[in-house]
Every structure is written in C-alpha cells, then in structure tokens.
Length: 201
Length: 207
Image 1: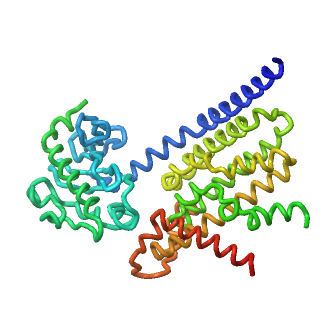
Image 2: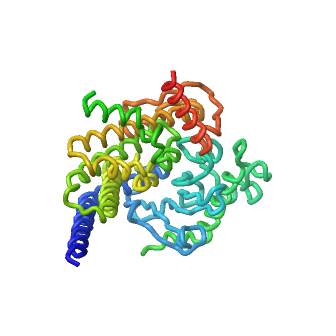
Image 3: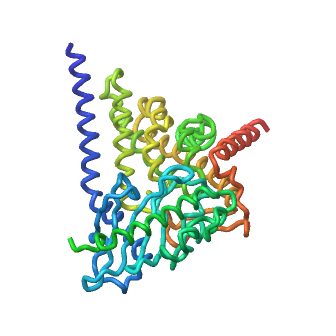
C-alpha cells in the first residue's frame, strides 16, 4: 500500500515538474513567437503591396467574410488604405483541390481589381513537380501579376492544356489548375463583395 | 580503450543509431530531402538526447523501477516541447522547414532506447557523452543521406543553408541546368539511399 502511494507521488512530482518546465518556456517564448509569425506574414504582405502606397497597419486592418474560399468557410482579408481611402486587399484563400491536399495562398488585388500578385504560403505538392508553385522553387507564381477578372475573360482563366492562357508544368497539371481556379474565384469574390470588404468597421 | 573513447566510437560508428541500431527511422526517412533539413533535425535530436540522458542519469536512483518508463517519456516529451518552442522563437524560418517533424522526435526510439539502455545505469558524465555522441552519429547519418538525395534530386548541396547559418552560407550548385531526379527526393529515394549507406558501411566492416 505505502509502496503504491510512494510510487504514485513520485510520478506526480515528475508530471508537475515537466508541466512546469513547459509552462515556463511557453511564457518566456510566446512573445517572440508572436513577433516572428507577424513578421513572416508582413514580409509576404509587403512584398505584394508596395510599401509607399498605403499608410495603415496591414497586419491588424483585417476583415473576415464567410466564404467557401477560406479555411473553415471564413475568408480573411488584409486591407491596405491610404488616408482612409481603399488601396488594395490581400485575400487569404485556400485551394481545396491540390494534388495532395490544400494549397494556402495570398492573393493581392488593387482597388480597381487588378492582381498585384499571388503567393503560395503552404502546400504539400509533389517535390520537383507540383512544388513549382512555390516562389522558392520557380517564378511561375509571379505570372499572375497584372491580370484581372476581365483580362483574360472567363475562358482564359485556365491552364493552357484546358484552353486557357496560364502555363502548366511538365508532369503536373492538377496543381497549377487548382491554383488558377482559386485565383479566378477569388477575383470574382472580390468584385462581388468589394464594397463590403472595404466597408469601415 | 578508455570508456569515453568507446562511447564515442559506439555513437559515431560501431552502434550508430541511424545506420546500425536503425532506430528513429521515421524522422530519418521523412526529413532528409536536403542536407540542411537533415542537419537541423539532427541538431534538435542531439539536444534532446543530451538533455534527456543527463536528466535520466541524475534521477536514476530516485525513480522506482516500475514507473521508470512513464517518467522517461514525460522527460523526453517535455524537452521536445521546449526545444520546439525555442526553435519557433529563435530560428523561425528553420522551424517553418522542420516544424512538423520536431514533434516526431518524441517518437524517435533511439532517445528512449538510450535512456533505458544506457543513461539509467550510468553516471551523469558518461550519459552526457553518450547522448552527445549518439546525437552526432545520428546527425551525420541524416546529413549524409540528405546530401545524397539533394545531390541526386536537385543537383545542389546546402540549399537554404541561410535558414540555419545566416546569409554567409551559400548553396553549392553542383550540376548546372540539372533536370531533377524525382525518385531521390520522394520517400522511396530515402529507403534506397539508406539501404546503400548501410551496405557501404557493412562493406567497410568486412574488408
């Protein structure tokens, strides 16, 4: 009986010590982790929207709108304004139909609806084939800059194999197809909800 | 041979966790797409091995035999969680590359293996040495396999080294205009590569 109690209390002491250590490190690193996450996102956001064109805090000026484009039906949008006037929006949609799961993206459009740029933030596409959507692997994703919902028209918003204007990669069609489709859908969404997106809080 | 020399030789070569004990295959095969990924996970594993070995050795006379395994698991899990937070706080870009594999260290059998087979029976200094050497041995196996796969797969070495060592480190492009060899990068390439490494090591032993 005493033996069991003794053993149990030793185990309890170790559990408390372990938990305490983890809690302590959490407390001492959480601030830095938040700063890192914020900086990583800001770095990508500022790469898409030129810094001198806006004067608000891109990171905190956000809006969430219900849409199937976003994760959990919730599309997050970062807004760029200058002197209160809308300049650009960065939407964070996800393509559900990648070759290997979801492809999370950033789509930046200026107020007039012209694409400032697209970036892939995370994906699990095949290394060497589908991962060319990642800027670290190829420049393909830069090719969206300057296009808009009406340029090209609906039929052009496809990869070349499907009769559109966007390149696919050798050996991978599904990945770029998913990206092109989601960019197109995001542009439609932007046009439909532009007023709501920039509505002051 | 002194005991330290034996521990060193065991960890690096005779009883290398990656190539001889074949423990920790899950992270070994999953992250070794590039040298830098291999090194990163290797260093994180080494830190875990050292901290867990030293702690297990320190408490070896306090913990009753019947609860030693739960206590070891508790210690290892706590240290891995702490290392993950540290990585996230101070090497965020590397964390982005390795992040999902860090929790896998908990499942790396070589850590609990060393705690049970070595650290729980030895004084602290030897346990520390064993953790360090086993860790380095594992890191060498990871980095070598990563190097083979990166060279064959992409034709480069040390790509994205700046994530770990800062801007001074540059990627070495070994073959220009290399058309990537996909198999080396995919999981089967990891198995082939590991098989070749083990065969090579065994051949050295025979001769």
